[in-house]
Image 1 (cartoon, rainbow, N blue to C red):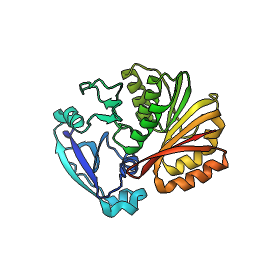
Image 2: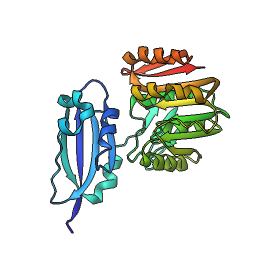
Image 3: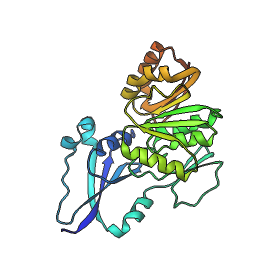
Image 4: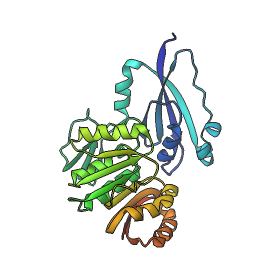
Length: 280
């Protein structure tokens, strides 16, 4: 049997916009075992035979991002297997939101912020580095969630649902399409000493009763597709928080929300990304 080693493939995005979420969604269909977000792109790790070269063509293998092909480059570095954990750790820095929230990995020392979230991201989205995650956390920080039922759509690492439980939500149902996200979400809940229910699905659960709050950090097209179902599972005067899209998409979101009688409340913006709040 041939010896194995890990390759670090650093996909760099030459753009003023943060397209990490789009790129990460596509890379998950390949054989990469883990990812690390950076300000300029994504570092992906793959285990291959020592005699095997890494072949990848951006235009051919990333069809969804074909419009970005001329802005994406990558470089490949061989890393020692014994350095795998250290390599992962060096690319995951703690995140601090509003001087109120600290998101760190288990190996980071605590800074004793009022709200601490311990996250091991593995292959899941939601470390707090992306603008949409930070925007959602800022908004959740302001909500009174005591004894509320919360539905977290596109839960990823579970960071948003876990924070909701830290804010005394009575119950959180986390939903994601990817099996590793479900596993990672439950692991992170355990690290934070909270309990949630994680469901693998690509749709809104309709047999689990009504929710006080629905949070959805996905992308514009999925949000538009699922809005009707969000309406069906929300209680009267329930709150809908959505992110994962740009400010220029807000008009389209507002029009669709109006069709289902959602009342616009407010939105926040960060680097062109926004989070928007609606109330029934």
